[in-house]
Length: 391
Image (cartoon, rainbow, N blue to C red; front, side, top):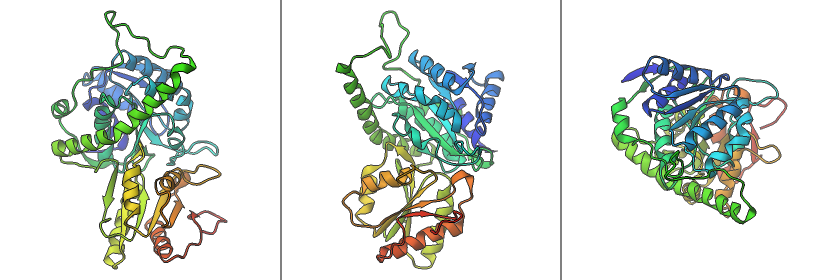
């Protein structure tokens, strides 16, 4: 079924297609329409779910923890300051093996106050134990809500998922999207059968109890093991989804014209679409450039990045967020993955606060990488289009 819809509607429709049992709803721009659309599905009888209106994002995540602990397929959505308010509770679902799904509309975190696109809201949550996937378009949003249920509910993973979409660029912009029929999704995504969550007096279970030091380190290791297990599960689910619905996103990363590339640029989110166009333009000029769409930030695609480091002469990393005092988070992770390689690795910071990242900006990135390939490096950390800062 073809529809022309916003990213927010795509995220909400994903909840319908996955037949979620419980939704915790609290509004925050630019996410509000996700939970509003779901309320319409529930009101119209399309979705048989418990819809709980809560008093804050902290309460929303607390309610999701409780609902998921009973064995319900659980869903919520948030953005920016709302995600920050959830921070205390975000650490709980991974260690309790609760596969909650939560779309997050990437938005500037105050101060200054802004409502436009930035990834400084989700990047600071990278160490909470949640799976994190960044979407390029509205089709990927709905598809990743479906896949996140299947990945997170896998018995070797059992982790919650954040599905990211850029504020306004996706959340409020309409695009053609191919919605699968719900009966097709039912065949692809089995009914959730919880491994560690029950309300069954015949099988009593204690969740989240006070725990002495003798056991907490093992719990941390188990969460790490689940995150590492997710790598293969993501790859397998991506392939199975592609066979079923005709859209294969490549797993943890998606390569574009990388076979003989001399330099590559790594991007997340909607900037990828612009970068893909620039790659084609440079290829037409005979310049061997390539693009890596970094889909999953957690788990980070360490092996895939290492393999690329063996074939190229320079790597550029685009970040729409900043880890103050060091560099962009994606750059930091990439430098770690490529530790020991002698190739230049440059960090390009652009689009923070919602500023447009244009063809001119991406071209500048590739030009710098082609210079770096020859040993000409002006700055490793490059702020693009920043007043008073020479790039």
